[in-house]
Structure formats: C-alpha cells, structure tokens
Length: 180
Image (tube, rainbow, N blue to C red):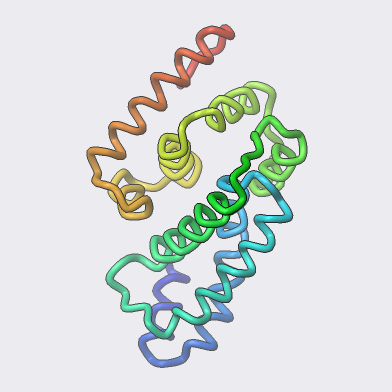
C-alpha cells in the first residue's frame, strides 16, 4: 500500500506523530473489523480497537520495518483480541443479527442470502481456519502474508485453507449450495 510506505518513511524520519495521524484513518476499519470478527461483539471490538491504537502509538517509534506495516498492525490487533477473548471466555456467533449487520457495514455492501449462509459457515470453522479464510479470501492476502500475519508456517496456512474449503463444501453441499 502506498500509504504504508509514507507512514513507514515518517517513522524512520522520527516523525511518529505525523505517521500516527496517517495510520489511524488508514487502519481504523481494518482494526475494528478484525477485532469484531474475533470477538463477535461490536462494543467490545470498539473498545479493543481503541486499546490497539494506544498500543500502536506507544510501539510506533520502535517499528523497524522488518514486517510490512499491515502485518505488524494485524499481529498486534490479533494478539490483543485473542487475549481479550481468553479473558472473556465466551463467543458470539456470526449468525447473531447484530454481528451480521456490523459485518455488512464493514464490507460496505449488504451480505446476500447465499453469502450470509457462507459466512455463517465460515464463522463455525475452528479459529485458525476461520482466520485463514478471512485473510485469504476476504482481505485478499497471499498465503505468505497470511502466514506472517498468523505467525504460522506457509504450509500450515495451506493446510488450514484446504481443511476450511472441505468443511465449507460439506456444510454447504448439505444445504444444496455450491462453493466456488
């Protein structure tokens, strides 16, 4: 992303305040969307997104550019959300109308009936498979990027995606729908 290059350049130049001012609008929706997809609770996702941006503000001067900026931000968000989820010890399903409505708002377009059924099945996948599917298909990341973001080997991502596709095909095949 061109915005990432500009933000990284500002950090390297020691202009972290200006970099942060560009980072927030560029990543607000993505941080919130990821938090919402992991937590399944809009209010908790909003709170977590604010906490993540505080963490990013504190950590931005230490960002060394070894990982892509988006990968670094994703990892911080994912780790914070998983920690919050562990402490909360409860989950909310994507079949919850409020969560589905929020997912539609994040995507910027309504979820069609078949798409809604697909995303309910995606929500039912195990955590790693669900995260891999969201990153690969929804966020259009490469397998290498998904591996870096999830902190797992590339072959493990491929395995997670293969298992997720098989599970989705079985689940949707049972309802008469096809998986692309």
